[in-house]
Length: 246
Image 1 (cartoon, rainbow, N blue to C red):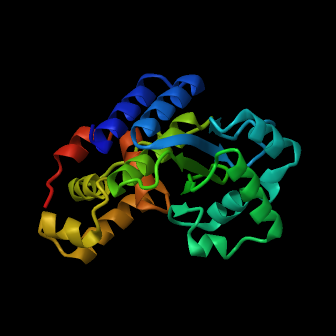
Image 2: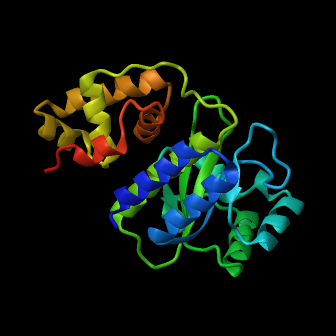
């Protein structure tokens, strides 16, 4: 099954039921089909003692979650701290990430590896009005293809939006036709240059349409703008899949 079909199926589950148990189970099944075996979509808090405004959905080994909570590792967790300021997803072996680690943080990652949490991939989530958050996934194989990574990026942001105690889906945003078209293509991972080529506009114009959509939703990333547009039914995955391709 194509990664976007898996993502669409997951989003349909989210729209049908917002219960945490249902969302967690559906996300687990979906990421397994994309080549991942564990996930933690969480606000950067103690997972066993979260504040009411936090999102905590994870299937990490229970023993590790108990250790993490008992030792208050959320305060120095290297993945949390790096994702607080990161704009794009990162692997746990990326040189830029590794270079930030101190001895205590290296020890945390070593303990996690001993429990099967290794070669992780983290998606920072900076949702308007929400606590800092991220979605980390542990792959079940050595390589994950680019389409699967992009699909899980959209799914993770959508999961966080669906699970959040309060979301902005009732804000009544409006998108122009061009903004919708650009977001549909951005949802496929298309660059500004490719979007411009497909729509017959300049890459700068394509960039400006996406930036205006981001400002309408009050978000910092194009992926979050796509998620907000999906959440408010301003675009659909059917539109995304039907969007022109090179």
